[in-house]
Length: 546
Ligand SMILES: Cc1cc2nc3c(=O)[nH]c(=O)nc-3n(C[C@H](O)[C@H](O)[C@H](O)COP(=O)(O)OP(=O)(O)OC[C@H]3O[C@@H](n4cnc5c(N)ncnc54)[C@H](O)[C@@H]3O)c2cc1C
Ligand code: FES
Image (cartoon, rainbow, N blue to C red; front, side, top):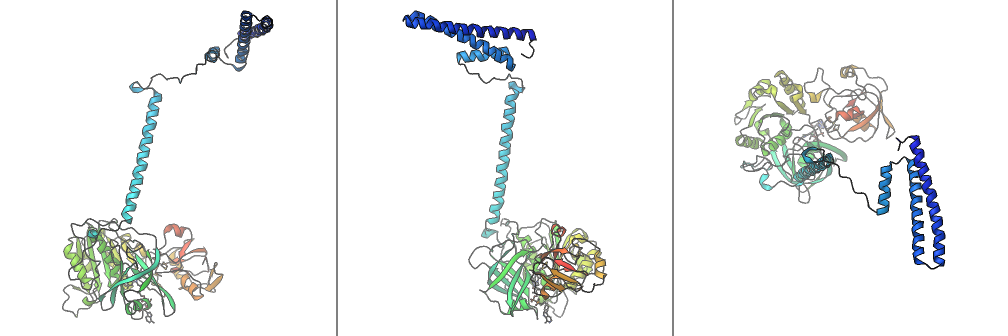
């Protein structure tokens, strides 16, 4: 239609108008004839009149359709088809495209098939991901089968019964996973004496079943107790393996003047309830981090190493495990029997220990403190290995220095400090710290040099304002934000007080702080301006949300 010349268009319009005219006339004359035929009661005449009217209607429709088509620009062929369908009542069929694609199929078919295949693959992938998720959930929630649990060491009268390795026939227990911290009461199920001043406390649920949280080897829990009218909290490493689900064990050294450790040793009995929260901590090793591990401990610092060792042997870790321990004397060597048993049983476990005191003729091993030569002799190629260190502060500092001298990169050295539970953390280092985990903290939110912060003189009248409680405390240069808060009765939750658990985290809204240890503060939290109250110190005034 758009291609019609103006003359052709005028011709069609004239023809259409003629038809409309003829049609109208035919209808009029048909009506007149019909009246006469009806009056004369002549059936044949009635039939002819109706025929005339029908012809007129058709002419009228034809003309008006042509005019509408011209006005709307519809092609004559399409118009004819529409007229034909209208007259015959035939519906249009779906046009079948010609086969122009591959394998004798049209592109239409190929596209539809590709779409269906893609849909099927997508559905299969979703199903596969769902099955994997369900699988890992079942693995997490299913308690370990008895045969997968650890064996008992022979004649192990003092060592905890959670110890020792899985039998070669046993299948590997499930890998350790840490759940979110849980808080509640656990029942003292058993108490084992390890040495003269060390006891192991086995804790389980009051009702039967697994302990209500899972943890990674090396993590700790926090005990809360009211002792001498004082609410106190102390952290204790879980020494038992995460593969043991029915209980956890913590091994505690009795401190002569210590509040919690004396309470545990002297007053707590089987059947008592201990308020526990956890697990916490990043001083963990579950075997996937490196192909071998060196565990160096002093005194009661053996507890996280014991947990790691028990777990690795339960899981048939294939790498070398070098276990180096230092104690005062052989009688203070915690877990000695169990360690010797595990060494005999596992070819990849290498145990060496050294005793400071030598009065006992029964000790066949090395004598003296852990030294560089002792480490080098015990561990071949130490420079390439990951090392965990835990023990008294002086021993840890010395061992870290020796490891650096032996060529171990600082990021391969992981440490955990056990205290102090009360008072101040260890003094800031005077030189570049040895291990990455003890690197001097920088500032939040701004980051001036840590050295500058250490040597800077305090400004007179330095304070810390606690906005939530509306109180302000004086802040000495050696005082932590936590200590300042405690001095005026502002409550900030805490546990380890050594910068590892992350419980004392608070937002700093103004000022700059240094933090000596910040293992418990994820970098993302630090970037948001959070600080560890137990570590944060400042020579300028601060505003803290607490
Ligand atoms: C992450 C982590 C894990 C830990 N894991 C373990 C573990 O597995 N096993 C373990 O035994 N400990 C562990 N500790 C240490 C534990 O938390 C406690 O610090 C320890 O038991 C001492 O607590 P306490 O209440 O008995 O002593 P506190 O009352 O806190 O006293 C601390 C120290 O000060 C001394 N002291 C206190 N009062 C006086 C006084 N008036 N005069 C002189 N000296 C005094 C005490 O003898 C003690 O040495 C861990 C600590 C941390 C941070
Ligand atoms: S109390 Fe544990 S990090 Fe501060």
